Amino acid sequence: MHIFQNVLRILHQGLSQRARAANSTNFGSPKYSGVAAAIAIIVVFLASRANSAPMAPSESAAHFSQVLVELIVILIAAKLGGDLLVRLGQPAVLGELIFGIVIGNLYLTGFQGLAIIRSDEIIKILSEIGVILLLFQVGLESDIDKMKKVGMSALLVASLGIAAPFFLGWGVARLFLPDQSVYVHIFLGATLCATSVGITARVLRDLGRIQTRESRIVLGAAVIDDIQGLVILAIVQGIIASVDSGQSLSAVHYVWIVGKAVLFLAGALVLGRWFAKPLFSLVARFKGTDLLLSTSLGICFVFAYIAGLIGLAPIVGAFAAGLILDEVHYRRFCERGEHTIDELIKPLAAFLVPVFFVRMGAEVDIMTLANPSVVGFALALIAVAIVSKQICGLGALEKGIDRLSIGIGMIPRGEVGLIFAAIGASLTIGGEKVVQPPEFAAVVIMVVFTTMLTPPLLKWSLGRTAKSEARLRNSEVGAHNDENADY
Image (cartoon, rainbow, N blue to C red; front, side, top):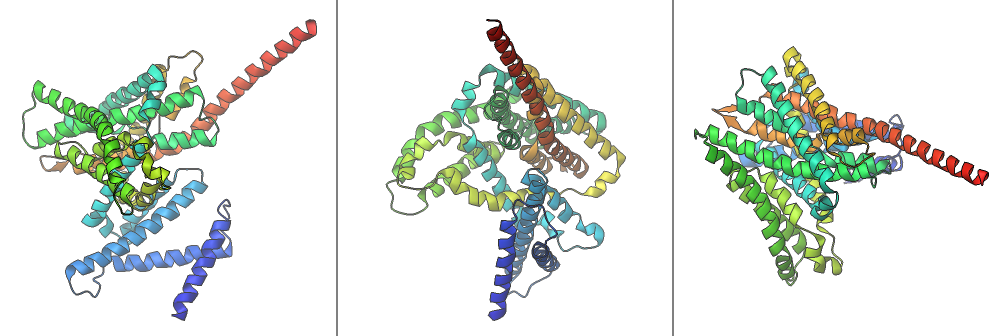
């Protein structure tokens, strides 16, 4: 017992030191290094136990213990990776992804302790619940009324930001993968449609430019882009599922697939907003705890289930559920001092979402990059991903608008691109995955590069605009002073 207390005391001291040095990049301090070394020892020990057969009364109990070990390793890797990348000025999600790649490729060193993370079905299910919560959060943070206010420019920017990447990505996939079916080419084109609004919003907020015209257009367009991208994903997924089941696709069938996706989102928004407020008013009368969280999760999972039931991706339903839930619907809960849905969901997402990103990273086999054609395909995807989003800047109609900054702000694919790739890796045609491991690795590399490139490029572009505006203001002030002097 005393030993256990001493271990807790040492860890507490190390973590306290870590908290005090949160804004410092001095990784060489003795206490920080000691804690890092302790964590590394724990990870190695747990990893050595991941594939072992613990003493247990049954196989299911042994598997449960193994899953606990895998989760501990995943969470430690996610938080260390996120911390490191944030210190380097990058989003935490990249650290989770990169550390996942490291975990998934430790077998190259002869260490097999963490190979099970790739194939464990329970980890897969937890990661899929995590991505449902992630899209639910994105929906909660999206405001349809604000999207209406940004006007036609945001709609045109978003539409060009979908069309150009889709067709250019389709063309690149057809050029590099001529032996694959047209449905593979279409899906890879769809993976380039996404835009990560969270990454761009973070950079704009850090720069104090969140209220500029360009920023409002980019953020509005990114949200519209997500909606349109999810519709395209639903359509492409429906087509591939129909082909895999052996159905012949007629014009009527295509129309039905498109109509099903559009009707689901439109119906969810209309009917969802109609019943949400009465539902929360009813639940508010119950005596119990955590009613707001339970009801919100119930709505999220019901919408995700219905989406899957009609052949759409469950994330489409989760996103729609987030869109319909406004704070006005559950105001009675907030009036009595309860947290908002956003605040209640965050702890759950903080646990499950990193499981998804680490697992996605672990799916990447870096040995596939030894093939020059895969590297060439990845570079081509990166080039198309950057160029295609510059086209969308042409959709900004206002005079004097900074179209370059708008195009750069739409570049990062981030978590949404990874979600598209993960769904492609789960779809099959004739028993073969639509997105094979080499293509999956290429898409992940594209996501990493576009996400890393956006912050410095956007800072440069917006800094250039700010300098131009400052020069213009100075010249106007100078001209005004000259007029007063002449007067």
